[in-house]
Image 1 (tube, rainbow over the protein chains, first blue to last red):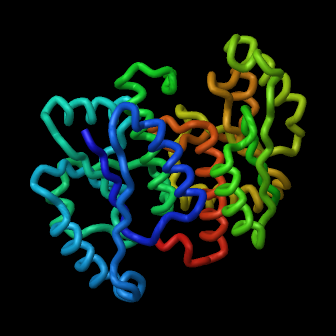
Image 2: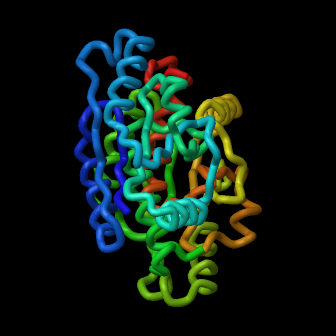
Length: 157
Length: 157
């Protein structure tokens, strides 16, 4: 199963880039994973939240394939444990899902159309994290989930 | 008010080091913050959980000053929002606290004596994060808390 982390915004800062690659490399023996950074035309992103969300919706709906299993990260989503992430990925594999897309929404959230398209909506924490840091957290949690599924000692709870 | 993040374990990986420094620098106009890495004698840390916890307790109790306001991070703690972190730091300042210590426990948790010494116990998430990543998350949340208290636009919720 292939996993893509979709993140709207700019390219990763150096330490985020290094950190996500660190966890991607550890995950690679078990499954492929990549970060896809989606950029809006400059200016729109910061000056007009309503138009930005609308443009993000168009971009996302165009890019989403029917077979993509979409997990939306949103603070109003379900708060899962790391073991539950693992169980969910296992269920996806059991269902024959080829690609899981984990979407980190833009700074102003996502539109209702995207929320409806999402197969699941998860929350990471009651805390608000910057999108760059969410990339790193997700990279680590995916590695953790697959280490659980493969009985690696990384997750020892 | 001075903030210290105490973390038991090894020195930070490169990307964690770079990331925490990134947030420390942003926080510095408002308050001082530093990471204190506490290391146990080698071998004990990994081979004997019970002895490791006991040695950690001794090390921590020796290092804690009466004036230290201790916040323990533990998955069984209270899950606060970022705004609540800000409120808690504000209350500490109102009470004249000089130093807040945010303690990231060892791999096997902390002893009851440390739990009792803690002024508060907070949880970051239902997810399990590696201790290195927790250093970075805490650095960012402290920056976010002080940006809230100082009406900086960083936290726009």
